[in-house]
Amino acid sequence: MKPAAFMLVLLAALFGGACSKCGNPQPAKGNGAQRYGKLPGLKHTTCGDLLDEADRIAEEGGMPEQLGQSEIPATDNVAAGLKGLFPAKKLETILGESEKIFPPKAFVFNPLQLEKAIRFSKKYDAQHRQIRDALRRPQCDFDIDHEAGFAADLSFVDVARIAARLEAFAVAEALAGDDPAGAVEPLSHLLRLATCLDGEKHPTVRLEAAFVRAEGLNVLQSIVEHPKIVRAHLQQLHKIIEGQLTAWPDDADAWIGDRALGMHAYEVVRAGEILSLLNEEEVEQFRQEGSLEQLPAAARRTADQDEFYYLETMRKIIESCDRPYYMRVALFENIRNDLQKRRDSADFPLVAGRLLLPDIEQGHAIQARDRANCEAWALALARGAGCGPPPYEVNPLTGKKYRLIEEEGRIEVRNVGTGRRGDDPPVVVPDLAGEK
Image (cartoon, rainbow, N blue to C red; front, side, top):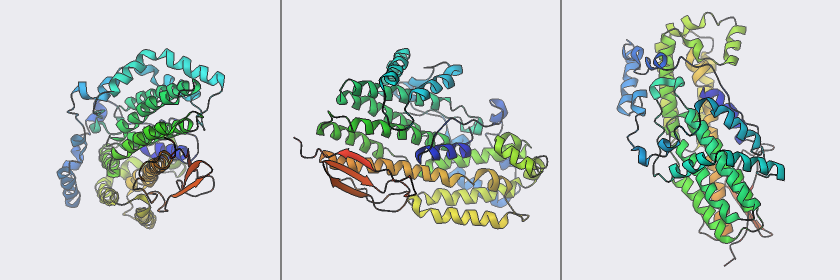
């Protein structure tokens, strides 16, 4: 799965659209991709600037071969407990089955839909028990093969998404039985799965974590709306959300992984195989321009200068992660402007400018929205449960201050979304702070 295309789909999901699994052409798997993992072309380049930057990345531990190899014992690793839960050939089918059951908007089921969810859960009850056992382990590392580049096996993401859906359906069953207390634990498991995913230094996995968490927050909304919710439940839910924020990974981690993917991609380019990196839309675009046949040779000829531009730009992007997203916007605008100026010049970085850089800002926006969603929930739950106020004031996506409104027995947090039409959803919880 190519991150750029996935970002567009996931961004639409987090900003109110529909999300579906996307697939794109990839380089050959196994040894076909592994042979590029040590970056042989980069190591033999005569471009001094490129070699210097590569040395800096190696000193920082950012090369593909430096990002993998888990050292966590299997007995302590959640990921080890999730391996082999579902037949690999059936993963897509099972995930699709859960997709049809999961409500597309509010997490609400009519009787027939609930019955489907319960039957799905019973069908995979043995796997669900194994998931719960795995989640008792203290650490998680999915041991991604970063040396395989875009061909790395990320099927564990589908396993985690199915596991999260099983936990969501357990919440639905508990709420249907008028048991909001029984809904809290499966929600905590669901969000723990998101934390497991977002701990990986890989952009696709990090953004999939945001998708899982977005579904989890929809589930959370259904819990706080239950008529039998009490203050103690809100306190438990607040603790869960604060746990998410405490474990939050650095934004930079995903883009360090993205840079490693890019470096692997340049090895594919040097081998004359750039077409294997294109999705269908990109293939069609180059075809319409009449340049598809010339693309492999052109990209290969300028690979060193192209990669140096890419790595310089990625360094700026990664360093910008020390600031909230709304303060990075100017950098992305400068990158776009520079690429536009170079578009018809001899020094235009073809691979960086057309394939690797254009959609990265959207990934950063997803990270920021993901964080804003959790901060807003932490604020709402803290006030609704009568806990001390969390230290969250400014939305990392927009730079606007959150607005907390108390009225008629409920708490609202606003300024969570972009503020664009249709994207300013408030977080709403009951005001139970006065309960004993």
